[in-house]
Picture 1: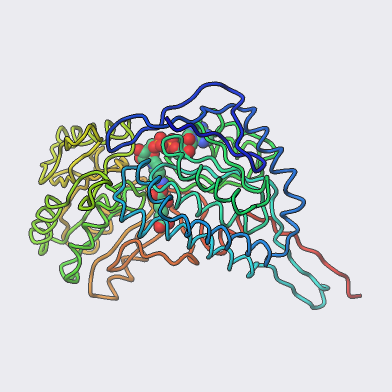
Picture 2: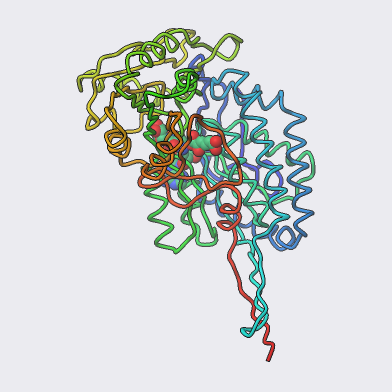
Length: 475
Ligand SMILES: NC(=O)C1=CN([C@@H]2O[C@H](COP(=O)(O)OP(=O)(O)OC[C@H]3O[C@@H](n4cnc5c(N)ncnc54)[C@H](O)[C@@H]3O)[C@@H](O)[C@H]2O)C=CC1
Ligand SMILES: O=C(O)/C=C/C=C(\O)C(=O)O
C-alpha cells in the first residue's frame, strides 16, 4: 500500500488527523494507496509555510522566477515516464493519452508562464497628471483547488501562473487522484525548489479544501470542479471579499451544419469521448442539421462502437474507465434516466466488464428533448445526445438552451455563418471546425453556471496579482 502525505515547507508532513482515505485504481477497482483526509490544522501549517517563504519568493526578479519554473518543467519532462505511469494508474487513462498529451501539456504550462512572467502587465503614463505607473504585485498566499479528471494538467495550469506572479501557493488536488501531485512535490523538492513556495495539501474537500478557502490569510482561490462546490466556494469568498476564479461544469453543444467539412464526424468522436468524456470541454450535445443528420449519426455510431475500452496496460485501449466508483454510478444512473426520459440508445448504454474496472461503453442517445434532465445536467462521461435541427436560428436556440456556457463548436464551411454563430453562442469558447485547440494566451473559462472569471495568459497573471498605482508628482 502506497502512503502519501502533505508537502509543507519543502518536506513531507503528516496530517494533524489520523484519518486516511483510500485511493483506488479505476482499471481494477482495487485500493492501492491512501492519503490523509486532512484537517484544518494542516491548512494552518501550510499557510504559515507559505507566509514564511513569501518575502523571498515575491522579491525574486521575474527572470529568476522564470528560471525556477523552467527548471521544474525540465524536471517533469525528465521524469515523464514516472508521471505517465503514476497518472495512468491513478486515473485509468490510456498511457498514450497521458504520455503524449497530458504530461507534455503540463510541462508546456510551466514553460509558458515562465515566459509570461517576463511580460508583466505593468504600465506607465507620463503627462499633466504626473508620472503614473501601475505595478501588479503578488497577492501573498493563494490556494489552487483542482479536480480528478486531468490531475497533473489542471494543477499545473493553476500553479504555474500563481508562482510566476510571485505568490506562494497551497495546492489541493482531488483526493480521488492525488498521486501525480505527490510526484510533482517530490520532483520540486529534488531540484531544490524554494521551501514553502509550493505546498501541497492532500485530502478531502470538506476538510482541508474548505479550511483553505475559509482561511482569512489565503488571498485568492482558483478552483476547477463541480458547479455545486463552486457555489460553496464562491459564497465563502464573497463573504471575505476574496478573489476567486471558478471553472466548473459544461453541457457543450457541437453544432454541425449540412456543409460541415469531411473530417467532422471523426473530430466529433474525439470531442465526445476523449478521456471517456471526463473533460469539461467535451461535446455532450451534438446538434446536426437535418440534411446531414442520418449520415453523421451513422458514422458516429459505427466509430463509437469500434472504440476500444480497456486498461492502460493494454496499448490498444482508447477509452479508460470512470475515475471513481461514485462517478461510475452517477454516469450509469444518467443512462438509466435518459432511457426513462424517452431516449433511444444508439450504441453503448451499458457497463463494460473488465478486471473489475469502472468501464462504460461509449454511448450515443437520440430522441431526447432539450428539456430532459439528461440533456441539461452534466454527466461527465462517455454519454452524448444527438439532436436534429432545421436552420441557424433553431441551432442557436437549442445550443443556448442550457444553464451552462463553457464551450461550443460549430462545423460549417460558411465563414459568415460560423461568425454569426460564434457571436450568438453563450459560451466562453467557440471552436470552428476544430475542438480543444488551445492557445494558452487566450482567456479560458465559461459563462452562466460554467464559470466565473477567466484563466490563461494575461488573465491568469492579472487574477493572481493586485494592481497598485503610484503617482509621482511632476509639478
Ligand atoms: N472542470 C469540470 O468541469 C469538472 C467537473 N466535475 C463535475 O463534478 C462532479 C463531481 O466531481 P467531484 O470530484 O465530486 O468534484 P468536486 O467539485 O467535488 O471536486 C473538485 C475539487 O474540489 C475539492 N472540494 C470539494 N469540496 C470542497 C469544498 N467545500 N471546499 C473546497 N474544496 C472542495 C475536491 O476535494 C477536489 O479537489 C463530476 O461528476 C463532474 O460532473 C468534476 C471535475 C471537473
Ligand atoms: O485547458 C484545457 O485544455 C482543458 C481544460 C479542461 C478542464 O478545465 C476540465 O476538464 O476541467
